[in-house]
Image (cartoon, rainbow, N blue to C red; front, side, top):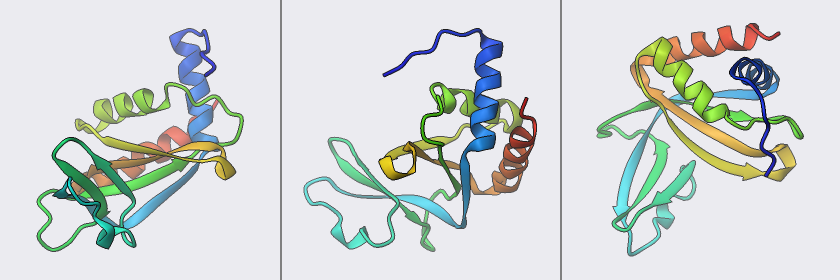
Length: 144
C-alpha cells in the first residue's frame, strides 16, 4: 500500500480532486440493516442486499428498508478512478459530513478491480439525505 507524505492542505486539495473525479451514485429507496442469526448465512437476502457484515452473533444485512425498519438511511456510493490516490478519503469526507450536517455516517467498502479498486457505500440518516447531497455537490464543485 502506498502512503503519501503531505500536509493537511495538500491532503484536502488531493481529496477534493478525488471526489470530483469519482463516480457518485445515489440510491432512490431508503436502506436499513437487518440482523440475522450468525449460524446460517442469510441466503434469502442475496438478491436485494448490498452488503453482508458479521460479528460473533449476527449477520448484518444492508438492504432496501422494509416497512418495519427501525432506522433508515439514504445511501450513496463512490467508485474511484483507477490509479488515483484516494487514501484518507473516508476519514476526510466523514469528518466533513459531521461538521456540515451534525451527524455521523456509516461506510461499507468493497472492491471491484474493473472499476478502479475499492468502492464505498455511504449511509446518512434518511431525513438528512437532501442536505448530504448538497454537501457532496458543493465539494465536487470546489475542485482546485
